Length: 519
Ligand code: F0G
Image 1 (cartoon, rainbow, N blue to C red):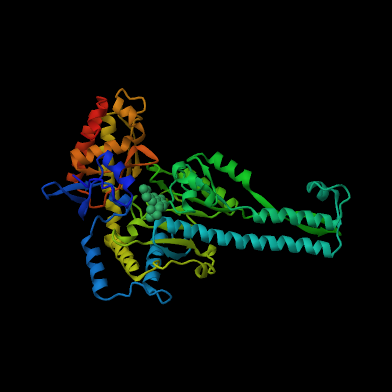
Image 2: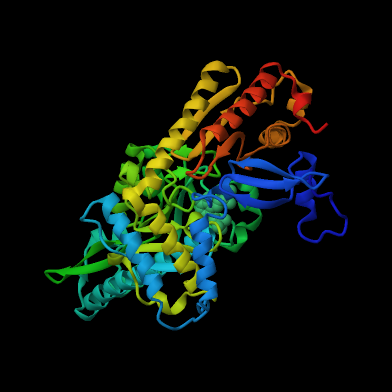
């Protein structure tokens, strides 16, 4: 049931070979709603229930009829897809629609957010990071200039220097204003030139481009490319005391001088060394982990204290998947930036956007950041259609995500009750759910022990083969299967999954690992 691995395959043949080894090398020929179809050896279409949901890009399923009809009418109408450097009213409409949703979920006092469009999730994250760095540098330059002006004024006034200043700067006793000024300039230059600091969460995933992969926790993805971009400090989830420690250890100041009664005294200005705290409100690739309300409040408090902007990566958790449009709004987390992608493109367009709070917005960014494909008419119009469908009937899509998600979660909870020896945990909100199996590294089954590192993929291959269910773990959480179907998930589809999972649980209870291997 699937492609054989051709030796002359030039498009990632190694990955395909690996997929083949666990029986996941299937070619899908059609998609509709929650169903993907492949052809068997007789050419018949075989349906598979798709819980991978394009890794979360299919909130409205494969080939949603209204989205597809809209796409066709746009193309038939000769829409100018690429008309860079012209008016883009549809992009503004997307931004307005997202702002209206933000106000609803955050409260009427929410500030407006400006929108910068991009193509992929990683790109939206990187646009936010670049903007945050532009803003940080401008704030740094302003603070540096203000401190320098103070020092110059003290020099011009020929101010005396008290012993306290000399001691604080570690200078020899009796040092005069010129020596003090040189030392302050040396220190301020060093602070100004420090590489920007990023904070991120352990288990976080923010993409695999040069910059964003350094915010992604998984070492396998990140470490080989560490030399290419700034590093992040990874903070453990729900450990506010560690967050405080990291921030305390890294904060820095710029020094200035004030002249009081003809004598110079030190003035300390907070230096903007923190570029951004980047986090997912519900970690996806990290194994479906929901950030708690208290931790969210602490993040907000600590970041505000050092003027570090918060970039809320809603690439996977957003677009209604959690039951709210922004998962962060459920725990009261308010971002200075938001990144959205995946379902924004309705399953057919590649579209992403980053939103930035107006009070942080730097219009200079518009002149230094762009992409050939970003903000194009086609993907903006598709995004508008997606938002229209989501907002229809007072947000029926969000209610469905919550209700269908609960129905699915109830099944997982029943499995946990029935198989406490096999199921470790059930996590998530709405249609972003994770089912964690117990670690199999010490399994009685040799097959399970030997494949413990790719355990979830074995289970995925088995579910596909035997139950026509498509789901995956992630590379960062191989014991957790991830479920992100569309809101049109039916009870029958849930029942089909339950049958498959009960079969897997029984196999694991019996430690009959051989059965999960390819025949
Ligand atoms: N941020 C989050 C939270 C993501 O989950 C992803 C992708 C990205 C950024 C990058 O988006 O792929 O469009 O560049 N997550 C997928 C996953 C790949 O497996 O969870 P991208």
